[in-house]
Image (cartoon, rainbow over all chains, first blue to last red):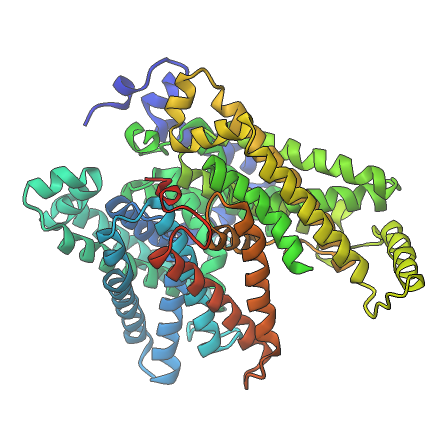
Length: 333
Length: 300
């Protein structure tokens, strides 16, 4: 891997290029100091906790989205519906089949992974074989999103549902409130994301996935079974999306058919901020977007926080189109 | 009427996606800016409707240039997401900037001038022996006339040397640049023109609605527009006319079939149909009804 410095001509963003993470980290710390001084440390800490919670489900959702993009070059607009699907399947397991909540969560996660694999076999693989273009696949994903979301709506109805999680119980320390569910969310997300990072970094499978998203032709010539890796990617992406949907539904407290649609653009924002196709980037981007959105509530009406997240994404695209951890090559094609 | 609104709206998308090859997914945002600028100038500033409209078009075009300048150098999929996010920002702003837009309460009373005109037109028709039952009939006539005029204009425009440069950019931007064309300027012009068309579609929609609420301008509107463009065929302007008529007939038609379903389920069913149309088109006939197969190679 060549350093980005060697690829980009000109030295206009030399500082940014040197260490984008450090620059953004510095900017975040500066923003935190200003906000804390202006609005009080108490509320800043509360917003930071909220931001970390939403950042953790953004990171979970974004990781799957970015893996699929990296391996398949598919902009999966239906990814949000994977989240919805996972949440509803967990709901089905918990309230209809009366499974205990942890089992129901595993049930939802597993079924979402199955959905991912099923769609790969039914749609994406035949389309790739025919040599479909990027735009063609993007529009198909868009159509798929419509079909999935509204099928869920027809089957489950538009009523707001609740996962069995207790969203009112909370832990208080030092005047800060954290819901008990939110603590669980943070813990689960931390464990899963760490496991994902280890999987990608240390195992043979993870290396193969990364090789495939780096350079498909080269990966194939080294004897990697690409079709198998693609399936594994869908399993991972589906499971992560299912978990993200459940976790999101649990921490917000309600599940609606529009759950995924509401959050999918924030996931894209996280993916792009982190560098599209880069799983570690998605994790960093997810937490960054979560923090930015929650910090924004300190200075602006809460209902506009999502727009602030998009603003952050557009800013990153303009200054550094390849994202914080992305490489120049992927943005230049 | 809805078909005409979507038709005007999709003309702009066709110019961007079909002819120039820039994936503008923020069309609903430009439409919102146009409609709101017009309504705000009339209601809050007391402008005449006739003056507010051209100024609103200029506002939408200016927004297009502002959005396009930094983002047009991005790759197609990034540009799609950026413009989609832009449209959402516009919608969030319209929902929250209450002093200007009245938020989700909606903005009323921008259409007095149009009602007077529409009423007079209806009377005139009556005097000439055409008896109209719906008071929306004049608006329908005007919107279809607008669609036809704009369609002729845009279709003629893409045949000019200017349109040829746009197609060259779609086919091979580097080659167009090598020929000394300022491709960014051309792409900006294409985007701005499309935004102007979106603003006009926004006026028609606003006149139809009589109450302007931000959620009319959600991304689904853009996606329907994209479906129209794809169904008609990328690069085909006849396709836009036919497809917007077809799609709206299909969608409105499902309202009148006596399905034994609750109304919200029928609404969901309509979206499923749109989604399926999109998937099947992409799978089996990516060139749409009137497109050429090679035009779909875009983005590879």
